[in-house]
Image (cartoon, rainbow, N blue to C red; front, side, top):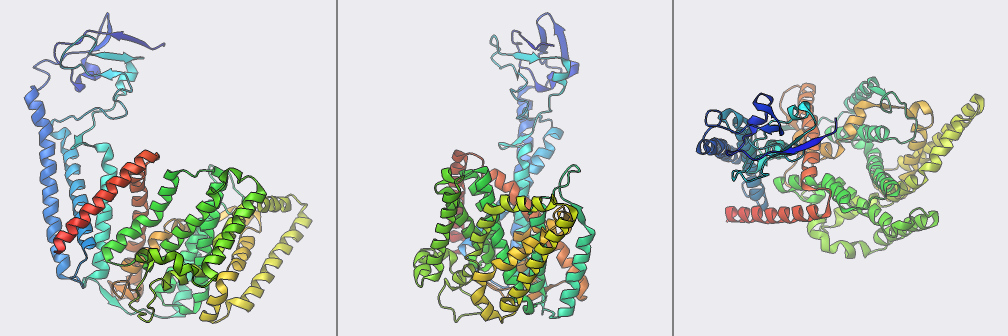
Length: 604
């Protein structure tokens, strides 16, 4: 039916939302119109105001109760804390956590009680105005009430009114819930690593247990083997997302097991894993900018939020320096490197010569920064307040930038190799497809040649570089780490069957590598204190394996929850327009200054 619109003179008394339901409609010559409220069907205006006030009062009461409970919790945590001299930032963020929990609990109670106390709320944002409904104004002027419809069913699909508590709609509770959950998790992090509530024990150094656990996890991973692609479509392209997440996942598991068992014998392999992470920073970001050509501020700020939101709050809460979690700093820095390489002259990125020239220029800048004495410290000296590190276990390092130079310097070239791989990806994909299109005999010989060559190069690398002692290996690692990465890429994608399959267990773990990296310090193991490394195990139960299983379950669940919370809060804090980002940045800056001022006042 063609839609039509009729106007009716406004009723002499206001229309209430509940009267738009089907039982309260009646047909007239003028078409559909809402029935005016009368004294029998609608509460008096003063009573309606009272109904709206009650949920708000309940919200205030619930929030006040939550704050009181939070205060007692802080007092108890302080009584068992290993540290009593808190910084102003710690005190300020503790206040912020309490307000987040109180605000969530208060609004949650208010929204829950609103319909039960007779307060219907306001039209949902999707319905208000979108279906042509305007509630008659109290003035009762002409043309004050307009109702349009296509048929009876369009009116029956109107959503119920949405409770609003202090300007917060019920649909906006997701952000408050995420903030409150995050605050609770941060409290748990402090409770685990800065109090005496949970015992700490020595690490068990056992290569047999380490490799046995790795083998068991690999067996489980093989049981989760899946085909890449969606809706039954098999994907055989190299380096598809599930494969790279799988790669990150199994490396991360062995990385944290390396810390848990203090398995120093695989130090060189761990260095290669970190290099592979940095390679992915170059590969993934270059691929995105090269293909999508999206250099917008929202996309870049969302990436920065993903990398630094969690680590920033952990640093403040635990009074640790940023460089303790050097992985976050490295990924952030090299992400900036890829962005500027792609952004400068981005209108010419489709020109092969220009693109290769920019990658070469990035290589030259990297050589100047890291391999010319004095340049690195001159450039980064102004950032020593952020990137400086004072290691309590190594007081002999008086240069605060030593850790940043050492960590980033080990992988200062591999991100460029990642960009080169991304640039060469279409060629690589065509070569693999050409091999698949060969006759079966020739195809088998080609694959055997590729695999054999890769294994030969890998064997040469292991014999020449990988088996060197730790300190000698560190000297050659920045210039040779690309070799085993290239070998792995060739072997992992050598056949269509390998490319089409991935282990879902490791893919899942690969999505939360940042969270598992940070939380291993504080809720899976226990650190030596401020700026301390995780030298002890978290002990809940006397049995080693049972204790590890229970603590690990909590550890992985909370890592996943922090990952999800980061995404929820990112969508709120980093909108998709520049003006919204500017406004939110100002709000967050003011809030940060305010909470820090509160911390200073409490400390004083």
